[in-house]
Image (cartoon, rainbow, N blue to C red):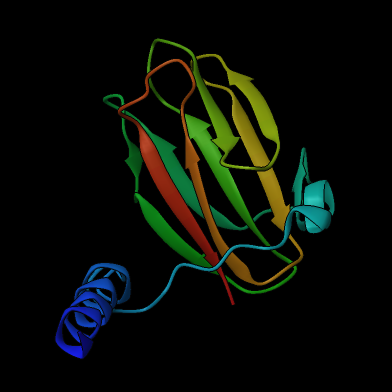
Length: 126
């Protein structure tokens, strides 16, 4: 009678305990309560440059300091967005337009183009 219970417990641990994604550094993001205060679109000044060209963000991943900034410039002939997962959409950038964003809370901020879903990038704030 105890053997089936023991086998069931081991199987449950194997199934539920094995979920973890393979290790590595976890991705962190600010809590939803950080909201738009963590990411502020239309910032003034300048920061790390990200070029939008060939339907891609280049570089795809950048790191900035807390209270640092990133600047996207659209060098494509078509419009793109800089839209943060769980955060603000910093608007649509026509060809030649730019957007500067201030980051006030440490974390990892994935973003994408809402017009071209294959376009993705990440800002890490330390």
